[in-house]
Length: 156
Image 1 (cartoon, one colour):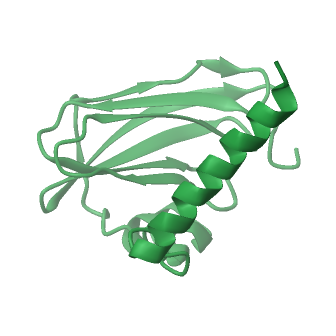
Image 2 (tube, rainbow, N blue to C red):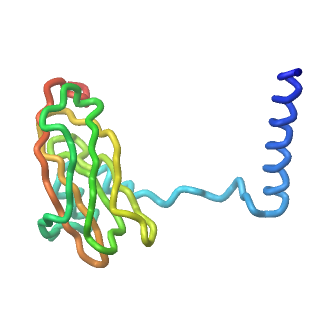
Image 3 (spheres, rainbow, N blue to C red):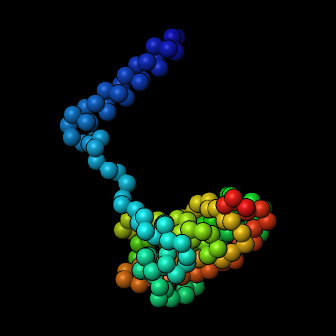
């Protein structure tokens, strides 16, 4: 069999499918596929400012939020963090690092009915508290876990 011919035909078929979708109006190349992001929250220079922009200044502590992160991170450049929210109607999960220059490291908006679970890797410049803010309905909830960093990941 001629594998080059097969590869060419697969590529041509895929390109044709995309072209038909664009022509039919199903796929709009000029349409933004990502949601608007909160630039002000990511640019905030301190924890109080970040919480204010996220509208989470009065967030209540919750035992229904679980943060799974290492107690000691060997490299602050790649700290794995998993967050599970058992709060009904969770609509967003934000991860903040108190001692980072820009505390907000991740903000996830969840669609209706999605499980309150996210997993990511974050940067930490030094040992700090990792704070999670969960929004459900019109309320905000929070949980905190301290992570010790042996080698800083934010230029440290």
